[in-house]
Image: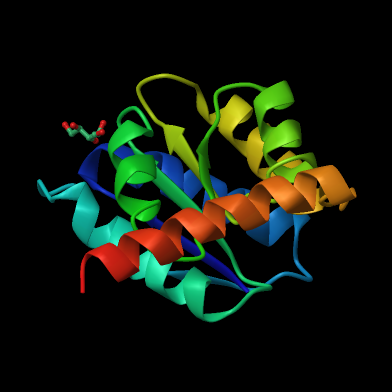
Length: 154
Ligand code: RB5
């Protein structure tokens, strides 16, 4: 399952990405968690909704869009189990999957155009994690940081 969300700045790009998913990734279902208008909204609210869904299911993926991709990636990465990557080009999208096993990508509607966004989404959805021991070890270390943080905060 793909969870998609945006703030007001990313709304139009979200609609374009949804159109792309319907046309090209028909075998993958998506859920649009908003926003549904261009009224001003706070990106952490949507980042949290999408990240919560993705963190509950290891096979789920998320796509978050704001003006730059920056606010969304900052907020999404606060949740345990989220490996969100802000990507602006094809190499970043590919490596986020191959090396980092990213489960969310964030896009900036004021940084890239819709054609690029659709291409990055395609790469994100179709590229596997390499799964090498060294990449897995590094991802496990990210999870260790989460554990230590949670322990410290209780
Ligand atoms: C909204 O103006 C803008 O700040 C937001 O979409 C995003 O770019 C934040 O990182």
